[in-house]
Image (cartoon, rainbow, N blue to C red; front, side):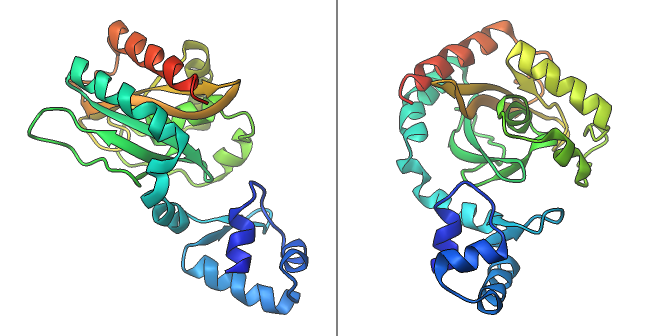
Length: 237
């Protein structure tokens, strides 16, 4: 648990020697603990650097207390207002290592037929609107590293071509919003905008639904509503 807590409480990745020193264990002892934690998904090891960071299972575990973070508290009222005004499902995410986007909160639309998207869901950056926002606005992301990874092609519309992805991410940055029609699931789309508080990218807010509700070419009013909500949320940060 000391090993897990040490990694959890910092933003950096850890090498075996420095982590052993930090927790007061030998390299042999900590090696076994690290690989047990990786095997169970609580930590992950970068295949290129060999360094360790928090794994996806930890985010699933920790999402049960995510409602206590300022971002959810700040966004919830705005999300309800957006849902009531638009009739659309509203989603809130934050970036996590991978890079990926973790769904923090969902306000389902009033339609009795709802599509599955739930707090704790993890979205691949290259195939989701929220993920593309993270790629565009999270300064420390190394796109070369992202594109060295194997990108999953979920549907025939999923973009995995490096040149095309780079161009799209640049476009997302300049226009301030992202979509991903049919890229994770055919017939579904999301529209997302960044939440930037005090100059720091904190997450994204967006609409989610079928293509006829959240079209590939978004309604200008939807973009404006999300951007105005994002600005009000950012005032809390």
